[in-house]
Length: 402
Image 1 (cartoon, helix red, strand yellow):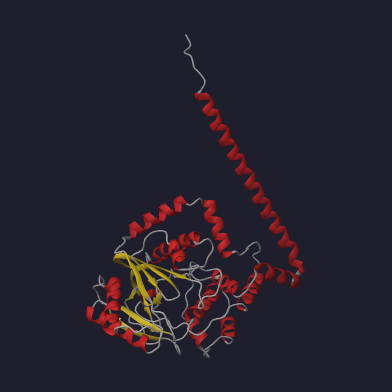
Image 2 (tube, rainbow, N blue to C red):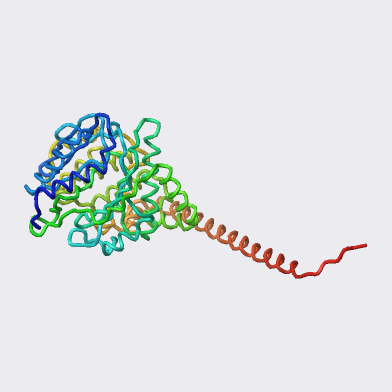
């Protein structure tokens, strides 16, 4: 672990908090959070500059004691309790859109990740406000020039904007993993603190590596995203999206869906410190209308299981059609060796009476795809013939008739 001058460290963290929060003038809160032995939350009234400094001091204090430290990206209007993250409905100002890209390392051993920091950076479609090296990944912040006040009327629109940027980055990443951080109560690792994911020895420092000074209005972000979407052929966007999830939905049998989800859980594991992943599994199961007992039974096989915690969290969830879903379960499961085709074959071996229906459905869809490709080719050939005819007519001499 690198030794750093404490006062300079505090100043750097305070400056980072100023970048996010200094234009929030009414009473609002942000907070630090740690996940060792359960959640611990430390809240601060961030409209007060001295409180932002105290927040920085606390972040350094916790980090120097060996705690991984995260901060809330956006502010909340209700001070969170000492053992809870801010609720989505309490998030009052959005300060930035953020991106989290893991990099292949001893901490992240999946092949489906950016090979290095430069490759992760290449996934970004335009220059962000700041880029952070989190120790084992890249965080990018697209900071708004004025924090956006969140209301019931614009909350879903803000999440859609966040997720559209992430979808475009996933497209540029060509199927490599990009974390889903489009939720408004998002917390990220605090720059200026150490990343203890692999222990205290030689723990890397999470730190800002680039500060462009750029700030964005919502309209500027929307214009950039619209231009990127328009520049991407729909067929390419669609094919990338399909490859990203790689989940066939040919059969809407609820038994098949539940079977697949249960088998996905067999391949998903969390390690110490991956509280958000554990929570994400629960939220995905909730949004897919599964039962809390499924989450609880799976959680019993994971580290730091606490009786009653699943049910307590479950009762506080709210359905979000754009939130964490079976696609996230699939992504985590494939990292553990899950193979979709094998699981489907396993299901149809157990239910041979459904296999014929499934094959028929797939066959009809394949036929439709062939027909669409045929139509596309015919249209392409027609355009070529039309253009050739136009060029020919340009070279034909015309005469006025008397």
